[in-house]
Length: 226
Ligand code: DC
Image (cartoon, rainbow, N blue to C red; front, side):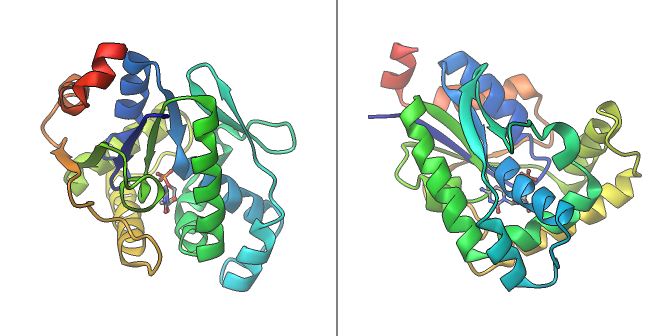
């Protein structure tokens, strides 16, 4: 049976870095589920979809063809043969992605895509509903969190380092908190800690320390095989 490590948590909690490294150590493919919601949001914006209309978002989202394939230790995504790259990481997409991610037809589609990825091998999947809705039966489920200040500092640095934006930490924090609110209060698959998931607060931990906690908590028979 395919093995899945599931990692949930709010924006900026360190899910991507931790999942990438754990994936490398275990030889599991890294899957960024948020990128799928971002791609659909990007395509909606590119095509002038009314972001205040759930019907328009749902109808348009069905037409977005996303190709998923294993590449360099992760599942890479392509739209019309092109990799979206940093175009899906802009403040405008941050602002609009929650409106797309709260729609059930969009979530059902992304969930089906994610479950289908087990055909490519063992996975480490990060997101908001991976431990609760997409792979709730995984024996390796984690809830990564950190204070709003720590998360905003990390995201702000990332935006500057990657040349995506140059917002203040305060602006990044406000945007993170607004998204957390929508993601954790929405009707379908809201962000919450799953019963039985291992919770890790990374506010005062280094990346290596968080990776160490995750590795220690994995089923021992998985580690013996890696
Ligand atoms: O992790 P991220 O910031 O790239 O996620 C982008 C958006 O998608 C954000 O609004 C949360 C949402 N999301 C979700 O609802 N479920 C997931 N499994 C992953 C992301």
